[in-house]
Length: 140
Image (cartoon, rainbow, N blue to C red; front, side, top):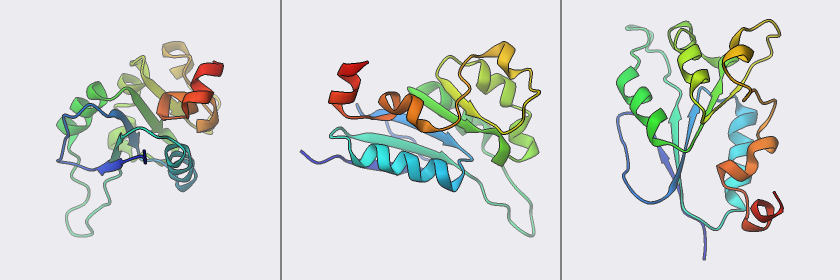
């Protein structure tokens, strides 16, 4: 059985039985790690991507309702704080407080450590949550 990976962006949502992961402003490295992890999976996956590019004339219009709804729908949320624009960083403490959110940053003096122990430095530590193979999940 081959895996089926569905990439979903605002305003779309899927209500299927696949495992779902939300990537909020992921770096290229995080995107590549996600792709590599899911390529080895035999299950279907929904990958929600929130990475709104600014419109030169209008600036950025964020779909906050979509982002909040999808963060509650997904089993795993990956928040790359270093790549988030200020509007989304302002919601960072909310996302970090969610038990299913794993967050990355290069900053050292953040109070987010008080809200959540889910700071990660790469996806290798949570590979099984995103879609690692059954053999890897059984080892844990």
